[in-house]
Image 1 (cartoon, rainbow over the protein chains, first blue to last red):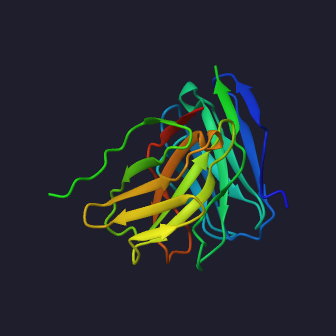
Image 2 (image 1 turned 120 degrees about the vertical axis):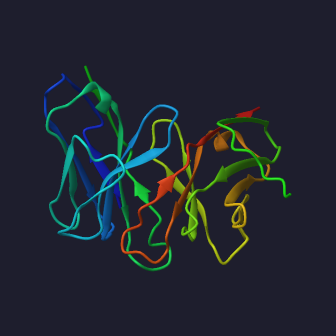
Length: 115
Length: 114
């Protein structure tokens, strides 16, 4: 099993450009998440999707949009990139409401630089 | 009062020694705690978890201790090895929820000297 797959791994954008980060999981998990990680800091939640068809804001949603395309896929879109969005982005998924359900499985990360 | 370990952003230990990584959490409603290990260039990976009805849980070479009174948890790694060098994050969440939103600590970078 691949687990959580993110694309692209690296991306350089100019200020004002748009892009979409793609994420897919093959573990039949209900919930999916997007986090960002800045140097020397922990992970901050951008958006999450508790189940297919629902999305909710996390701690730092401004400047981002998400789409839960189906149970497997959860994309993150930057409509007009800003230098403050330079970061490493992690997609994660979790199983549901039973034991271990809230343990997150992370992708390898997407490093985004906005010039 | 009880002594509580401080959170340190970096920790350097000698190979073979035991490591203790501390974490303070903030939400009194949190009842499920998870430690993750993040190696360079990778996403965080699950190490061990503990629910609030427990004070201690042991895994292979790792032990997590939970002190709910002072909202503190620690990760102990026995006989630390070079492969343990990584950033360690604690996360707090609520067990019975339909979305495992977790709040992460700032992380501790563990360096193991050979």
